[in-house]
Image 1 (cartoon, rainbow, N blue to C red):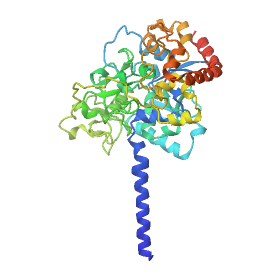
Image 2: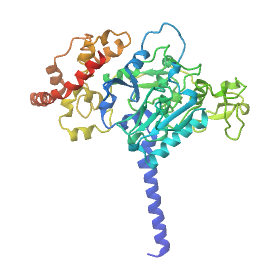
Image 3: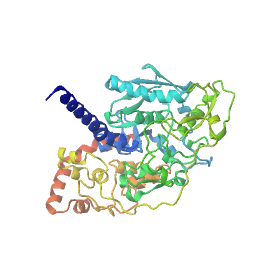
Image 4: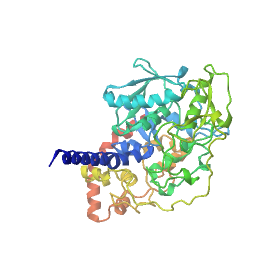
Length: 469
C-alpha cells in the first residue's frame, strides 16, 4: 500500500473513531436531563432515602434527589403559613444568604484533581459572569462550601453556620450539575416545586413509585420568594422528565424537551440572583428596565456596567441589551394535557442488573427499595399495589416520636409510613413476600435471607429514635 492510500486509511479510521466517541459514547450522557444525571450518578439507591442519620447523630433529609436539608428546614417547607399568599421561589430566610455576596469554598483533597478543579471553576465562572457573587477559595472560613467526593450529587441550602457539603460523585462532575448544586448553596430550591407550579406543569403520581412521592409535594407560599419573576421552564433548577418518565409534563408542550437543561443559568435565573443579592445596588442608579429586563452592575459583552439586559430566548447566550429589542420573548401558554393513567413496568436505575449480580438476594432483602428502583429486574411489576407497608426503615420509631401527627410532616409521613401511621391496616409481611416472590420455594428462601440480615438495621433504627426524640 502506497503512502497516499495509507494516509487516507488513517484519516478514515480516525474520523470513524471521533464520530463514535462524540456521537455514540458521549451523546447519551450529554442528552440526559439534569435530574437523570443526578439519579444515575448515585452508586446506591439508598442515597435517595428521605431520612439520613449523619455520623454526628443528626437526622438530615434528602429531598428531591439532591437537596440536603435539616429536619427543621424540611418542616418549614410544609408548615401551614400564617401570612404571605404570594408566589415564591428562593429561600425567604435572609440569614441563609451569603454575607456581602462573598461565597467561600474549599475543594477537598479527594476531589482536588486538575480536571475536577477545571469543572468546578467553570461552574463558578458562570455565576461570577452574570452576578455580583464572588467565590473565594479559603479553607479557613467556618462558613464555606466544601466540594467533596461522595455517593451522589447534592448540596445544602444557603449559607450555613459551619462548613457545608456540596457532594460530587464522578458522574456529577459536569458544569451544568455543579451550577445547579451551587444554586442550592446560594439559597435556591427547585423551580418545579414552586407553589404556582400547577399552572405550568402537571405532576402525574400514577407513574411514580410510592417511595418517590414526597419529592413532588410543592412548597408552601410563605417559605420561598420568586421576587415576582415568572415561572421558568428553562431554569437550571428545573428538573426534566427523564429520571421518572411521565411524572412531569409541561402544560405548554413546546417546553417539554427544554426542561431539565444543564447548559447553565437561564435569563430568569440570572435576574433572580441579581435581585435576590441586590447586585444593582452596587453603584447603579437605574433601577428599572423595559421588557422585563434588569440592571447588571458589571460590564458584559463590552457594554458598560449598569446597562439594562433582557431575555435573548437562548439559554446558551441568555442576555441581550434591552435597547436592541422591540419586545421580550413570548411567554409559555399552558394548555390541557393528557397524562398516563397507569404505572409503567420499568427500572428507575440503570444498574439494577448489576445490583442483582452483586447480590442475588437483593430483591428479597431490600424489597421496598427494589420495588421503587428495580421493579422490572425483580419482576415486581403489577405486584404490591394494594399492600399497606412502610417505605422507610425508620418509620416505626418516627411514628413513636409523634411525627405522624406533626402538621409539617403529616403528609409526607402518610406517604412513606402509611402502616406505622395507621393510614391503612398493615399487610402481613408473609403476604407481602407471597405476592412479590411467587413460589413457596422463593418465599422460603426470602424468609431465610431476611432473617439472617434483620439485625443489620437495628443500630440505625435506634439512632434515628434517639435523634428525632
